[in-house]
Length: 320
Image (cartoon, rainbow, N blue to C red; front, side, top):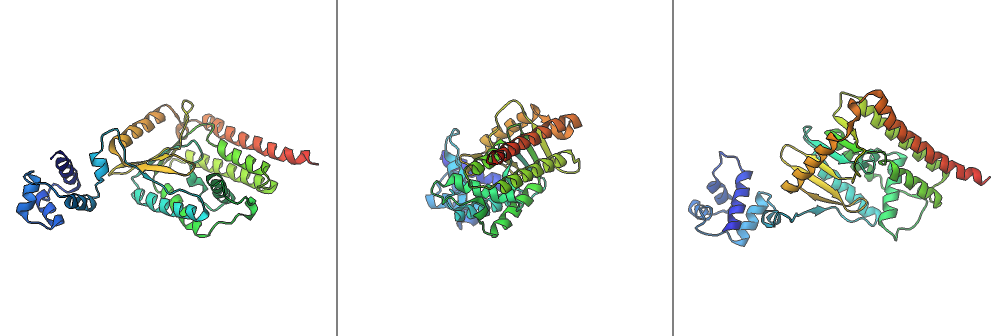
């Protein structure tokens, strides 16, 4: 009866203390009070159908409940091979993030190995370029078309705006280091050198990247928002994301470029939450630092963008 005890304990946590567990089980299973009492007092067992019905009603994962502690059940995002897959990925992601962040008291933590994708959700040239990059890198059979001829469905904009609104609606703690912008710059250079991105677009993308850096700097120094950037020099970041609500913690762990494993496993999420807190302790809070510290960090990013701009444009000069 050990499993039955575990299920009953999980159900008890889901209902208010003022509600009788016996009455609630009887109502859900459509059985008598006495029959419900026998199951709760362990004089009789739940059938498989009854256990599944209870788990479904109370939204309890039986896998999570009965697996050993070292096992974690995860959901995963869909695999992306086509533009249609990407469309569905952003649709589902927008819905999921929107549900988790609907309460303004929610806090989001992001370990920014790369610039968080939420910054590419505003319909700029960089938004289109990121979709272009993701599709090219996730699908080896993708037809190689130039960036300038690449077209995305307008409905992407709806889901991008949902993701952006969700991100701006909650308290955000981002952990950055000096390499966070590297992959975006390297992608611009790679596709330019591959002949799939022209010089004009490359320059516009770098300009847009500067805009994002400036935007983050402005948000960082604005005391009226719920946004914090932490500069960490000690560890490699990994694009992990953790969403903390009043009810639970939910963790997003990357396994491909856009693919994430998602879990609300209590012990695992608590460990990641503690780790984020420790990262923050070992980081510089740029919003609370002096102008010198802030400018040092953001100016390094701008100089790095200028270096890539010079590298791209110098290749043009060599042709003439």
